[in-house]
Amino acid sequence: MKQFLAFVRKEFYHVLRDRRTLLILFGMPIAQILIFGFALTNEVKDSEILVVDYAKDNASQELLTKIGSSRYFNIRQAAFTHKEILGTFQKGKIKAVVVFPANFNGDLLHHNKAQIQIITDASDVNTANMITNYLSSIVMDYQNQINQNLEIPYRITPEVRMLYNPQLKGAHGFVPGVMALVLLLVSVMMTAISIVREKETGTMEILLVSPFKPVLVIFAKAFPYLALSLVNVVAILLLSVFVLDLPVKGSVALLFAESTLFIITCLALGIFISIKTDTQQIAMLISLMGMLLPTMMFSGFLFPIENMPVPLQIISNIVPSKWFYIIVKSIMIKGLGIASLWKETLILLGMTVFLLLVSLKSFKIRLQ
Amino acid sequence: MQDDKVIVCEKLTKRFGDFIATNEITFDVHKGEIFGFLGANGAGKTTAMRMLCGLSSPSSGKATIAGYDVYTQTEQIKKNIGYMSQKFSLYENLTVRENIEFFGGIYGLSDERIKSKTEELLQRLGLKTEANKLVASLPLGWKQKLSFSVAVLHEPKIVFLDEPTGGVDPVTRRQFWDMIYEAADSGITVFVTTHYMDEAEYCNRISIMVDGKMEVLDTPTNLKNSFHARSMDEVFYQLARGAKRGD
Image 1 (cartoon, chains in turn yellow, orange):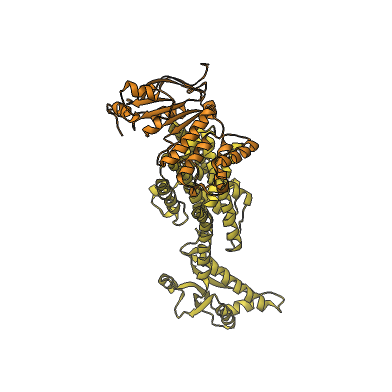
Image 2 (tube, chains in turn yellow, cyan; image 1 turned 135 degrees about the horizontal axis):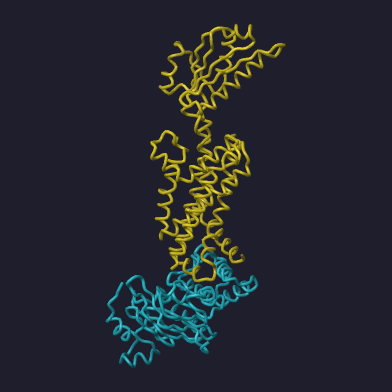
């Protein structure tokens, strides 16, 4: 144990002294989260909103003025009808359409409730969500305003339609996606490189001649990256909660447990790569091409897997990050517990055990 | 077992498929001896050394290191040997002190022992002022001396040196050999490979490997006499000229 600790301490020295490593370790996740995050908030400002007003009465005009005075929206009056809306979306400039039905004011006065329709272009899910949320809160605000002196309240219900992507697939997908990417990069690439570096410099030989057990060498090398990856998970979650306002709906403890599992999967992969390669460059190339690219393509983070041809869908199943992505998304966004995620967890666990066994086995062969 | 023999090899052989890297080598090394292990590149030195260090399992033959069997007691062997390779083998981005502490740590020395050893070593090498500098900033000669000191930090019975003086200037090499003599005087057996024939003359006994076989084994003086050679260079040349394997 004392030997192990001496080793782990040495590994931390390595990491903390190498500025480039540190930059990748902590700069990258923060940069990625912030880039994605600000891309998100900037888009909603000054969005072009098209209004189709069949009512043209007092209430609709008042509500429109309110929407127009917000800094988020610029209003364009439409001269055409409902049916032509699709065409305007295809041109891309218009982010949402607000439709007031005929007799909007009348419905409010006589039935105490009225409807408006909000149609957004949900191919860009984050923007669509943001816009409907803002519009809905403006409508709520207006409703409270006119209800101030009334005994029977008026109700305006916005009816929301998400065009192109009604189930909002990929919503807030980037935080789980970035998490998978960052953990993968840190755990696979960094571990592989740090082990191969010892081979390159010849220190691995010295370690193997020492009474320190070879298997422990590998574990001691992987351990700091497990710790640092967990720090990264904390950083990403803090950023997503406090900077991006994306709370963790499910259990944080479960999220950490699953992340730890995924990190170990990645470490096992990194160890495997490091055993099979002899130079840092090759280790890095394999990590990037073999791990990063499949994660981008097959985890569902950037491209929906459902839309892929069947062979690619099958391939996506062997990419560990796909399962991790599903797990994180379910916990963070849908608030699901282990009861609904045991299948994905089991698959990830299976992969981890398999990879660990394979790398330990090839490590032994290598020693002969 | 045998009074003061720390390395006993009998027909030690390593095959990789059809290729016989080390072919039935037989020799003994005594306690405190400086044993030169010579041979051209590809003669099988490295393979033999790996077997003796417990890194690779022999195909046949017998060998004991410090009384421990190379087949079954590799763990004990590793505790009793030190090793320094031709590649510089300390961590460049750790300080001198951290390197010493790390290697002390993985050899399982106690904290007090590491502490006293570190101070003693820094004192002896005259590295007191450099103790907290990164090893990368030291000149090569110092690095090699530090490397050697680290290899014998845990007071092993045998230390294996694989071309320890490659690329080092003659003055530093001379100093390095002083350290080797010092270690041998304190009872540590030194097993050294080298390509420098002047260094070979510093050894108590020399073996020369050709094509996986150990062709000769004797003191430098006896070897020169039996080959009618004026220097070890000539002895080596006469033997190695007949080699079929090269690199």
